[in-house]
Image 1 (tube, one colour):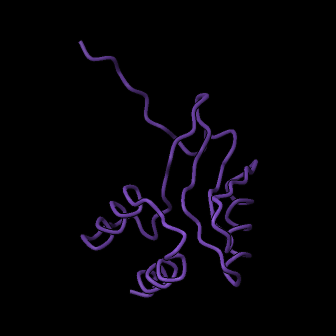
Image 2 (cartoon, rainbow, N blue to C red):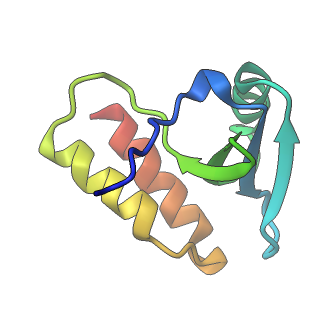
Length: 108
């Protein structure tokens, strides 16, 4: 018999972690006590050479990768973006191009 797997709930997260590039070639990470603090940091960085890569929530003694959706309704183009986000390896050389693609996706 399969063991019941408990659903992850973002409200149960003890910490949040954001991985990002800030213009250099080194991936940096910063931990936050609340999701709101992480999003405030993210919104202040948009005017600089900054690219957010991954968001993690620390739930049940483990880091879990997650993505913030714009809407509870997901269309095919959103699914394509989600798959790309979870499966893409970010190359620092293309930092500016990737940032432009992300901005274009948000405008649609």
